[in-house]
Length: 254
Image (spheres, rainbow, N blue to C red):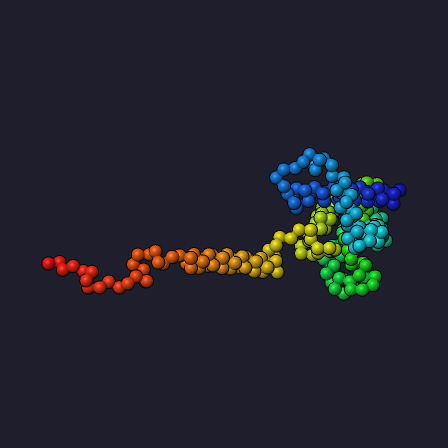
């Protein structure tokens, strides 16, 4: 029964994450001043596309979905270890709370740069790293579904614990499901949007701005030079080409 509940809550967790990722992108990441009614009331298609995008982030939908399911089950089996070292895994005890914390989730999240550098170059390690979003989502949503299933079946865990762990899991996933970084940790393809003010982007902006100002200066200089050359100095009275005055031009004041 608990295993059946796990799959139900896993499906609900996937739906919840997809819908929340859509609304977080709509309202926060790419906020707009005006919204169409359908954008608010019909999130389902976009939520499904977000899920497919996560599974396809490594380049293969089947591999991504398989890794997601495998690591979701792995997170569920990990939660059962509390019953091995102490009281049954569903009881409210310290050992059970430890194994129901999203330790695997955050371990993979913040250890991803080191895993990528050490094992993500060739072979199976590269496939594993390329599908990092699917792996991370499986570990997180699998842990959330395991917590919800034991709480829904036995009601011995504190619901506050379930709520806090759910927030801690969904917070990073909403960023990654919207193709963004979380605390400077990037998993999968690059961010969807770039600020244009970081690292080389800022240098390129300065170079473009300097080139733009230089071109404007040269244009103004050439315009003024052409005007100078086109001006007719012969029409200017007292110009440099006039003959010098003689003494006869001056009358005797007497």
